Length: 133
Image (cartoon, rainbow, N blue to C red; front, side):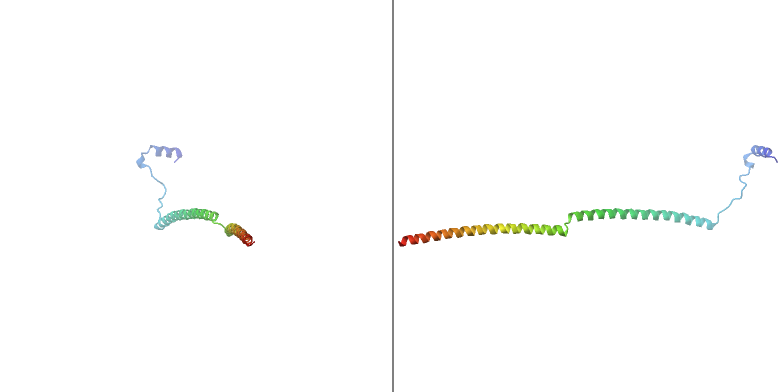
């Protein structure tokens, strides 16, 4: 039959008489269905695990950043051994200066009292010598 006649016959035939398909239907076996199901589950599980790993990595980075910030702040606020040593030397110097000041005042007061005592002794000695004549 020529192509024109075939086309004419097919287009004029009612829909119920037309063939639905000319190919053989290929059915999947149970093994293929199970393999496809396992593959689908495996892919979904892999995606979930990958998302979990990424979430854990993100959490690790966040915690690491927070800890680094806290440690950095603590290091800034905590004095070093040299700073503590310098502060102790400074306080010791202040205490030594204060002690020298107090000692100087005490020596001055002692010299003043000693001078007054010597003056009183000399005056008493003069009075005694003056009464003898």
